[in-house]
Amino acid sequence: MRPLFHPAIEDVRPEAILHALADPHRAAIFATIMRAGCVEACSALSVVGDRVIPKSSLSNHFKVLREAGLIRSERHGVEVRNASRWTEVEGRFPGLLTGIINAYAAAAGARESGPADPR
Image (cartoon, rainbow, N blue to C red):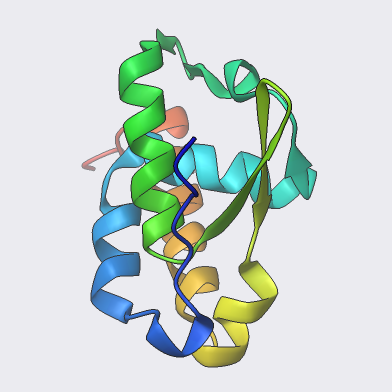
């Protein structure tokens, strides 16, 4: 089995992080992993909002997050455990991840509260 690629923190680039988190599904997957610390079953992340993500797409999302330096994936038998690299990335690019995650949270809050009253 081919080893999983994880960039050294010195090789992580902001444009790769921005690309990875530009997709709302990947941002939601990353936020879930970040909150949990470590997610043992990839299938636990196959539902984002009201949408089920196919296994092939989910694998690609994990690959993009991993190669951007946002998560660390380790094989344990037949499962892959994914852990956030939040602390490492925040150390290299202070405030970048916080700003992105907060922007998604603010946008979600705005959608839930509905459009502003134009009066």
